[in-house]
Length: 139
Image 1 (tube, rainbow, N blue to C red):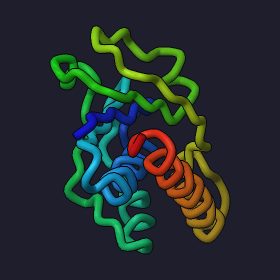
Image 2: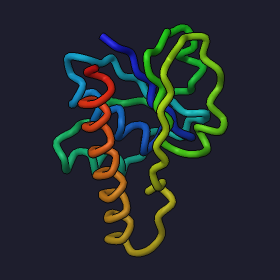
Image 3: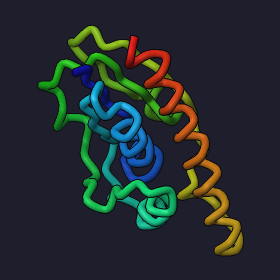
Image 4: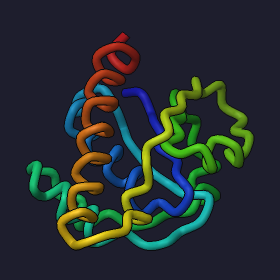
């Protein structure tokens, strides 16, 4: 099994969603962790939005990248520009990938508009993760 770390700023939304989808799509291929440069706790709206698509991330925890220093990852995926710019060096030969997703936690507007922002980001992450597993992780 290949080991993958999904890295975001606060490990609250985007990296949590990506962890959920990578676990689903990479079921037999990947061991998946997510972490942040900081820890902000798992966002309740992210949990609810993922649940709408049949993915339960309610038991996920917000973890700091330092917790995983000892793991030799095959892949590190940053899901926001801040994490990419501040990603610490890993001694492993992990392949690095980057895709900046909009942070739905910063969405403003009516409750419906905020929910829409979460769904949009979720759907973009879902597509990315499905393609990542098909093209990269299964190779």
